[in-house]
Image (cartoon, rainbow, N blue to C red; front, side):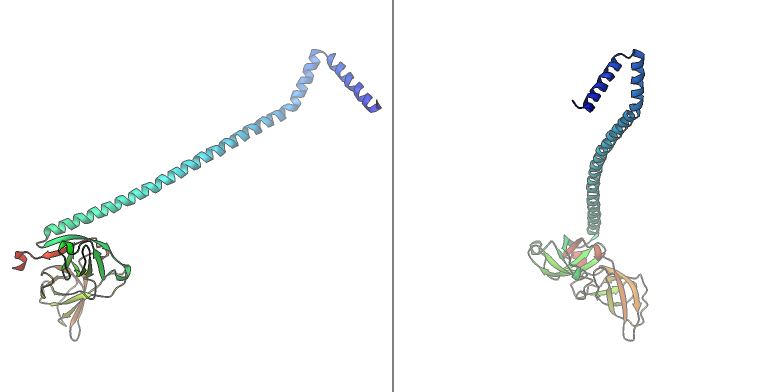
Length: 272
C-alpha cells in the first residue's frame, strides 16, 4: 500500500473513533455549527424555490389572462357587429316609417319600390328599383320619394326598372315658383359622387323677384308629371341679360334614396 493511501486510511479511522468517543454535548455543538453554516444556503435555496414557483404561477396566470383577453376581444367584436346591425335596422325602420307616412298623404295611386342598385359613376343620374313590368310599370312613369319628385322610369324590364333621377341633365320638368308668376324648365346639373346635387331652373324673367327659400313645384304641363309635386327650394337666383337662372335645392335626399313610389295613374280628383 502506498504511504499516502495508508496515511489517509489512518486519518479516516482516527476520525471515526474520535466521533464515536465524543460526548453528546460535543456532538450537539458540532451539529449546531454545521447547521448554522449551511442554514443560509438552505434558506436561500428555499427562497429561490418559492420564487421559481411564483414565477411559474405568474406565467400560468398570464396565459389565463391572455385567453380571457382574447375572449373579451372576440365578444367585443360580436357586440359591435350586433350594434351595427341594430343601427342599420333602426335606420331602415325609420326610412320605412317616413315612406309610409308620405304614402298616406298622397292623393296619387302609387306603387312602393326599393332602390336596389346605384353606381358611384352615375350616382346623380340613374338607379335600379325592384319593380317592373310585372307590376304594370312602364317607361316614362314618374317617380316620387319622401320629399317630392325623384325622377322617372327610363327602361322597364320584367321585375326591375332603370330610373332617371331628377338630378340628371336628361330629366327636364316644367315647374313654377310658388308665390310668383315665374315658371321655367328645371333639369339636373353635372356633379360627381360625394358632391351636393344641383338642379338648374332656366327661362325665368331676367329681373324676377325671386328669393332664396321659395318653393318650386311642378306645373303639370306636358302631361308627364302631375302638378303640385314639390321639387325643391330656391337656393340662389341670378338675373341675366336675356333670362334669369336659379339654383334649386332638391326636396328629396338623393344621397340616401331607399324607398320610392311609382305613380301608377292619377285619381279622378287629380285629373279634374
